[in-house]
Image (cartoon, rainbow, N blue to C red):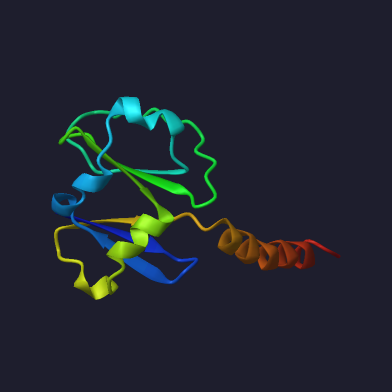
Length: 122
């Protein structure tokens, strides 16, 4: 299984292979600093509790949790850049995530609000 993360703000896709991510593996005790973004892989278990404390780092941190494998990886955005790859290279067995991009949502919402004002005016 591969983990594909799209970052629409940077127009980039990152392709991660858990087999080569040992450098980023962390235990629950090491999550004291927390993470800014959390992705949880699909699981056969009912729920996964991930202790998240705001990270607040300038670089931003991404926590990827695998409940079935009882593994967690903590990466910075800079670490993620190592895994940049074309989206087409993700195999059929990839799990896809997308980085939140707040600015895109704001710019998309403004025209919608304008249209709503125009439609509801007399």
